[in-house]
Image (cartoon, rainbow, N blue to C red; front, side, top):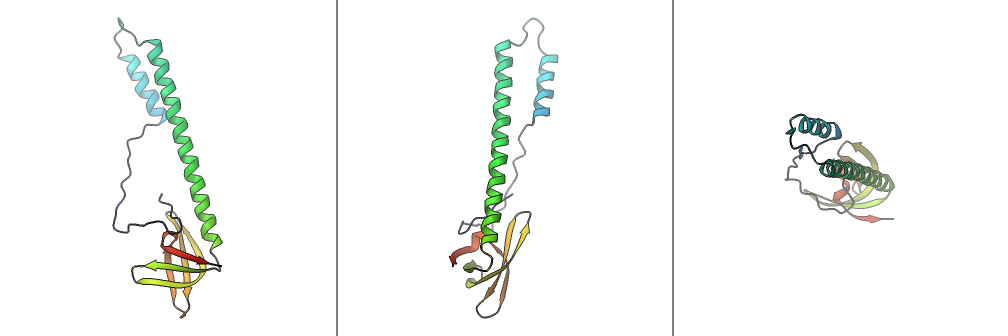
Length: 138
């Protein structure tokens, strides 16, 4: 999930691909058991190698959990930022130009917060991402 922040660069034309080359704990155990089943009985797996593989997997799992926790913190921060903009005057850059107005609503989608801005001339801009906000006024 992409998380927008105020003023971040957003490339509307790029497509993101999800890298599905990760291995979970269950897959690792299946792979490891297969390795043990098909090993040469005359040259079994060295205990040091076994322990190194287990330690490496534990490190990978801890890194995955840390990454997931950081992603949750970033999402929480983005949510807090977007709610903090309610009722504030902002400047937003869209494909149609630069607009100034007051944030009237925040709509939360799975891919981030979308703002609704009422401009000074009374028009309403919807679907504004946090990355499109270039200026926040008190």
